[in-house]
Image 1 (cartoon, one colour):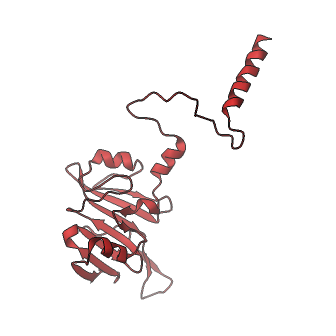
Image 2 (cartoon, one colour):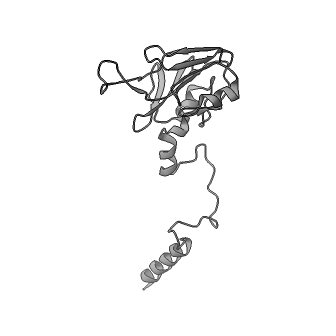
Image 3 (cartoon, one colour):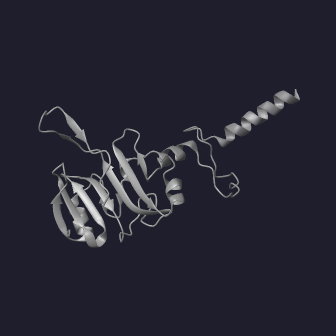
Length: 195
């Protein structure tokens, strides 16, 4: 009988902690978690942090898929207007700011170098440590440079590392263009050029 009463009490206790409208646990009355060196992430938070999306590809007024006009409003006129080698799309250089932009309508690739001071949405900037990059982008592929792609392969971010610090950040959306030989054939800009 004691076992049955204990089970009923446990069920009632769990039921009273659950919000009946959505099934979520009401945490307003729970004690705060004990602080630790590294708080564990829920699986949803971890998934959101690891997956690279279009919203990750922005840095202080420069956004993949955004407008070159927004960059000009923020940073002024470029020091040089040219075209991207092999693709023929506009390539604008903002030398004093350390900004290099490829666009064809929307921006599809952006590179920043010193003296650029802006940060990615995950807090990484020129001068950030390798450790900071690994914490912010846990699914990143390491090597000569650190690259993380979105699950669908459409978006990528690349950090060039030297002496344990970020020296250059590249962000791009896979740019597919028809070739002259066959209008159904496509080429892909997989890795951006080093600046």
